[in-house]
Length: 266
Image (tube, rainbow, N blue to C red):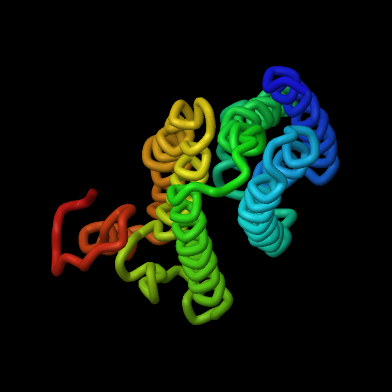
């Protein structure tokens, strides 16, 4: 199968999955399940590319394991988060429900399909690596594997620390400043971005792989400017108020770094 054929097939697969998830979301009254489907969708695409791309078997297996472990871990974490609050919807989607009003269900369908397209667009490093027939792995690919492992552990640790903090009823209304959260307001987002950097580096050893630099760049843009930090911090300010404003004044917004004794909001 050619790369274009694989991309078209991947688009149909993800579009069908997201349509089914949209129907389930309407039935549950909870649009937050799209996050679970988006994260898990990459494991589906990685397995599809591994079976159909036809490149070096070792490289295809390695990519499938890297993407599958990250994807399923994140999907499981998001599932537990959605289930813990259901039927209360995540604040981001509750806000969209208010803004979209009677058009919510229709606009939600387009939103879910946009997530499907984003899945495919961001999966191209996996496809290019899967098409690579070189019988050995390059040094940059081994380095990418090491970076991926570091990022995966960091993201898991950040999520676990936050989950444990929220599970303590004494912390209700408080800001998590434990572990990695003491050095970054969003360490989970930082390590998530590093995962995407590792996928780009792995793909860079394959033909046209350097072109996929847009993937970590796009993820970084979304995290810093669109659906990541801005939306999360707006919700935190609404729920935690002055405590979160003080936290913003002392803690790095993204890259883990030493705390400031005081400072302006960033």
